[in-house]
Length: 207
Image 1 (cartoon, rainbow, N blue to C red):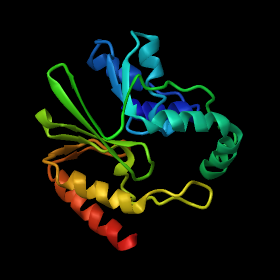
Image 2 (image 1 turned 135 degrees about the vertical axis):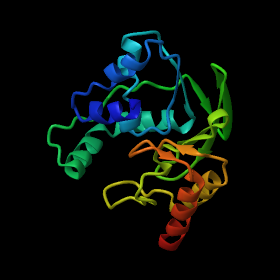
Image 3 (image 1 turned 120 degrees about the horizontal axis):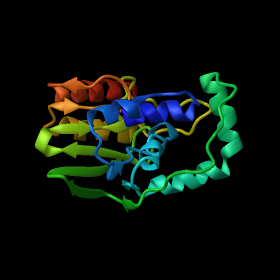
Image 4 (image 1 turned 180 degrees about the vertical axis):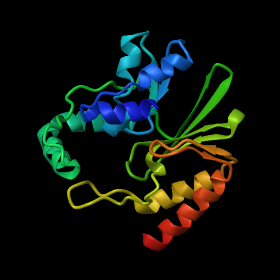
């Protein structure tokens, strides 16, 4: 839900997702994980920090490099995204909430009796994180699963990583996940491993 909020924030749209979250829990947000550095995944944090304490944000070490590159290429990114999304009023951000804790290959974070196993992967981006919560057999693939896989890029965007993406899909298929919460689209309950196995097979054919 936070990432859905981020998706709307960067497009300049209003959204009441934070209201929905607060209706469920008034507890402060203390810990956050960036699945990768795309702006539709990192701008949902602001409203929660505005109304509460600063959270500890975890991400792959390349996320900070992406943010710095975005600042340097601000005008270019605004133009190509206006064209791609047919949004003349789209403005590319110039300020970013950088992560507080970064990792290179893998990181385990424990909070509130839960274990968050973070693993680096490449797919749509070079800074992606696979998240797994073993207590709930919960998989958090970010944009490594987007229902159109692999999304190898287009002439206006950087080339993505289709071969590494297939490897990441196989790794996720091998996890003992029963629930998957993709960043875009509906949750998957049960048979999450089968979804990834099929996605990996299709991606291998197309790569």
